[in-house]
Image (cartoon, rainbow over all chains, first blue to last red; front, side):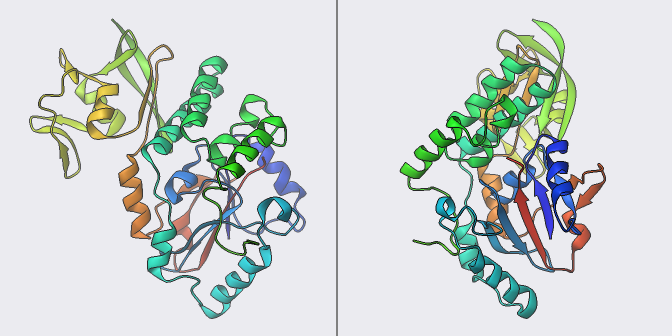
Length: 190
Length: 138
């Protein structure tokens, strides 16, 4: 397993790693630029991608909670993913035919790519202390990709918003009303 | 019009190139454009690798030998964000190119730092099954 944190603050990542018991024996990487989101087509966390021995994606990104503590929100049973993962690791059972893997990969829209460029510029301006300019670009990113969690919720800590606060619940309500776009396909309750 | 240093934000790195600021626009010498974007201005158009995009008739792309960055983005179909006031640009790959990479099912090259800043590559684990987990503190 390779864990990649879509976080600006290395310290925020370190806090979680230090609190983990047992400590991770796998690499924990920090992705301030959200590269993994763009390269693998990830729009929310926690998402997992399965990559086989030869470097082929055999299961596209999917929302895969580690347990069921947020099941009321996620409507996903973690055990379904865990079972499929064990069968792949132990028996080599592939979860999906290649055509299905391809079909489930979500190609970015031009608006989403532009949103990623806007978000990245906002982050770099923020690092340089250019808060007002940064906010303009982060806001534009949000307007271009209103349903992308890595852009919407992921930007909240950057601008001092609580990722469990009102701004998040407003986003969540709009996302749910839109039919929970881009959400997972394994272990769904409905 | 003034000459300034511009921060060019790309997926995975940042470069600085000299540019000319003209109002809300940023213009680059072709050599700086190649440095910043990988695209070169050739007689047949804008080229990168084996792809050339014709530029004939694209008004405003080249002025006095300088390439306008926003128009460049339109011509090659790449997302380009120009913030002339901040002297900053952000460029990434066109949606169609990313879509093609995703459809290939080949895991793209990925290199990121661990908590101690040491680079780790996805390809360091070739030959083993890999579970890539994207998570966040938020």
